[in-house]
Image (cartoon, rainbow, N blue to C red):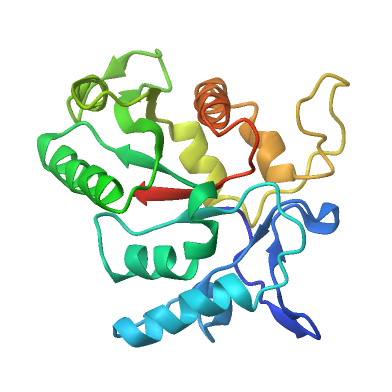
Length: 240
């Protein structure tokens, strides 16, 4: 999704060097098991202990340098990965936060409730809730069709006294952009008021031109505003 397929990490004297989605700018480093596979289509069939060891390595053996935020995208639901993360990040417990992501339909909301129950059991603060796939925007006329129902996330947030960060519809522009990330040529120029310079992070520069960018930016700004004012927090995405 970040246009980094085909790249791989390499070792340094200080550990694995992450792949930087923004190239030489070096501001958005990312790490994935996919970077360690021989072929991108290979499956990862690991039991709990091996997954636990890999999570520990990603946290301790990667040369992250100084970070503003560490964003961890976890699998949906609650599983070994969530427990392992909290175990390895226990010394930073006071600086951890989570964001719950759900889709509007009832089955997804049930899973989201399990995630919320998990965060409360382990005293993990929740910055808010996002409703993803909240409608489909027709690329021709702009009409929004609620193919997965709508409003479930907002209702859950109100019921559980969570901050509702916002809704994101299915955006065909974004899907096309991500699918073409590897082939897309960076833009050669941009206006002086571009939020992302075209030569620093081409994929993100293109994303700022899509209809979902303002929605996503507003959600991100609200999430950051909910972080403790005096601390830099890690953000764990608790679902999907």
